[in-house]
Length: 300
Image 1 (cartoon, rainbow, N blue to C red):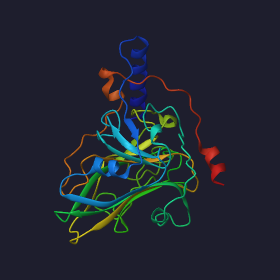
Image 2 (cartoon, one colour):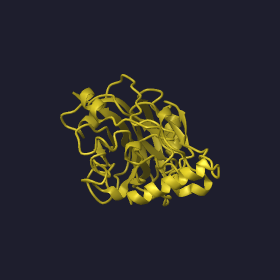
Image 3 (tube, rainbow, N blue to C red):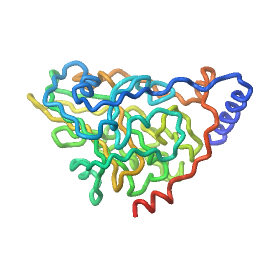
Image 4 (cartoon, helix red, strand yellow):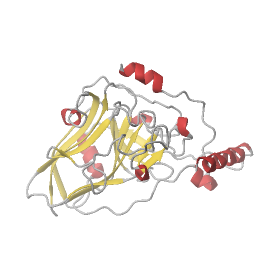
């Protein structure tokens, strides 16, 4: 597979050199906002009523997005919550460790997911809701600059969706949280991978970028769900933060209109930039230095 990717990349670059194709003009479009009502209304679907909406985090850490289909994350519109700067999300991937440091505290719920570590630069969207159907569903994608270098390490950013205090950002059919260490292509890539069928590699140190997104890796589209909720109000907190220090951004994208009492419709898989060669491809990337040594020092 690596040989095939290299062959396709070389052919694509040759076509660019001949001027037969141009780089894709489209990348995910981010509009930063910390207005909690705007954020919630951007994801709200049918059968759900919300109240007591509040956002905690930096104003640049959250926002709405459009144009998220190929060659990006596979969902078109929605909101983004990050552990740094949402404006860093659009591709192409020109950095191996894009970072926005907001100097803000972490989140106690997220700390509980990574015992022994503190979180920083948390962004949280919290609100009460009632479901007319007694169920809850929404689609999301998790992305991080900590792929692939910090897979299977302790230096992992963290996110969660806390429904009445319990995290429902889980691998399908399991109680395993979605995280860098639980969904990846391995470190080195292809070694000791976990649930790699749910992972998209975009790391410029590992053959990428393949997608028009800054983050070095991201998950397939997952659906968070909870069925048979008791009658009345429930509380949910959508949260993400850096762990251990404030270096290297992570993000969670939540699909617009899918925070609903009904299951969301299926969504397309993201298409690589090479996969849409006829529509234009991204040219050669700059030579980038791996970040392992620097981050190991920073983490102490």
